[in-house]
Image (cartoon, rainbow, N blue to C red; front, top):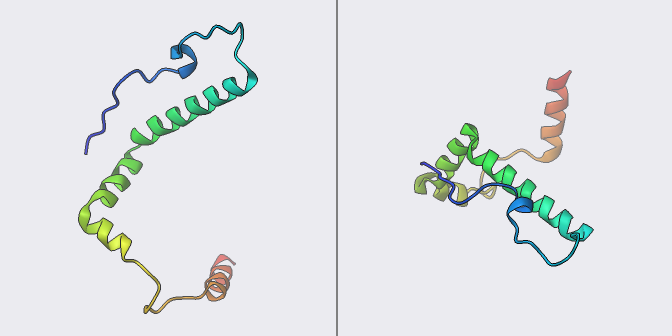
Length: 92
């Protein structure tokens, strides 16, 4: 799987069209910064090998079908209190 970004990944603050206002409002600046942060996070995730590998695995129709049908019903499971006590015992 190969992911290619298209377009310009620069900050929206520098690529946004100029407005007629003298200075952007605090709210628009905050939103623009949030969009920039989200874009940077997405690009970082796309360039992360572990994320790419996980994305390939869950994109595979065989494994995505298995993930969709996973449930605790009808299977021998551990209740939360038992898991917590086992974790506490192993942490000592």
